[in-house]
Image (cartoon, rainbow, N blue to C red):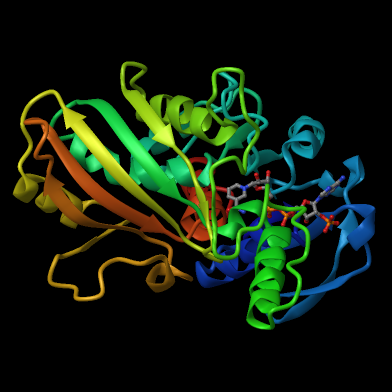
Length: 338
Ligand SMILES: NC(=O)c1ccc[n+]([C@@H]2O[C@H](COP(=O)([O-])OP(=O)(O)OC[C@H]3O[C@@H](n4cnc5c(N)ncnc54)[C@H](OP(=O)(O)O)[C@@H]3O)[C@@H](O)[C@H]2O)c1
């Protein structure tokens, strides 16, 4: 016995990993369909030792499906996730399409699994990758003292732009190594190899990028506290996978480094990396892992009630596929399908 699943966007960077995470977590599957655009229809993919054919997404493809794991661009999710939900499935959507809809829970299981008690539209949103790892680290600290303000600078991997981002970075690195001409960037906003891009997301009228606005609004929704002030600067760096974040957290009352470490040591989904780790905490070390890694916890010398942290996670895993599968696992407890 298991659940009847569909994976939409099965051929993308997140969708590919979704299959792997479902297998690793031994998610109980009665049946599974892999859906994508007409471009990928009839492609063969493997799951749990069997070969499957990718189908083009259609309304009929959702017939009888209980959970849909969707990882398509937001414009596609706006259309198909709604149809899948209307066909009776619960959709866990990785895109930004539904995240700020008040009738759609935005869930990181370690932080707000309780929000899954009400799913009015049949859609659950998976938050933005850079927000997920930040709130996993913030939640245990918030339980010590209310967080007033967060200042965050991100160092985000190329894979945040999907398979096309990493392919582009790889091609640029190869060209640099051969002293050849660097191929023109189409996935990223400019040459990423040997570079840092802060305009790799759509820019708003207020001078903030979409990614930065997501970090502000999604953090408030997931933490259930609209008073938390978040001040973000997001940057894309020449890293294939793994987002890093320098986070400054200001609390209502003083929190010591030891208190923070104790809370993080016991926190679900967190690995505390102690200072005696000689290489420090690097995105290369966390690739392929599901946890959020927190290190370099320091008292802020400029503010009595603030701490500095360095937080790293695999953006395709905890930032996308793993968090979505964890939500599905939480649903199993509520729905008792399997
Ligand atoms: N990458 C990350 O770190 C990350 C983290 C969190 C959330 N997300 C979000 O997750 C979503 C997917 O991201 P990704 O990085 O996996 O992108 P991706 O590698 O570009 O994959 C996109 C997927 O969507 C499918 N798709 C595109 N147009 C479609 C259509 N008209 N009908 C059906 N399927 C269609 C593609 O199928 P074809 O192969 O057939 O074109 C592919 O399977 C995005 O909304 C992204 O913002 C990504």
